[in-house]
Image: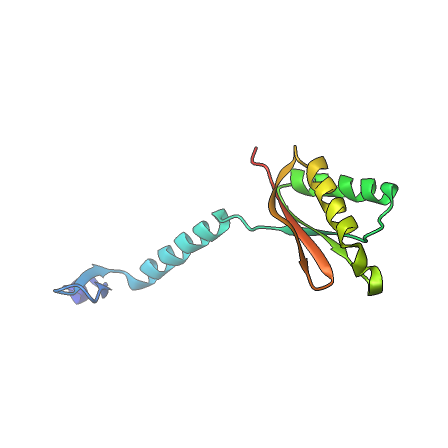
Length: 134
């Protein structure tokens, strides 16, 4: 039947009993399938993660400057990864780093919510903030 119509016989579901086949133009079928996948891929949102780095003794002016950048990132819909990097012996100021990150979370409360509370990983204390949905 497929040869008479100048089309291809395509096996749709080989595991079914009996196997399901369809008479169609195979090249057109592949093209439509790729087109569908591409459309789905373009609709999928890509998660962007922006990083902001602090030191345990970050000054107020520097903190405010970085906070403004964090606000902008969250408004644009990107996730924020804020971390305090402890150099050398500054690891003894863990509490200061945690206070700094919690202060940042409190200041950015209207733009995003804390996804992961401050957690120490090696020489970094990391916290994630996700943007609030509009």
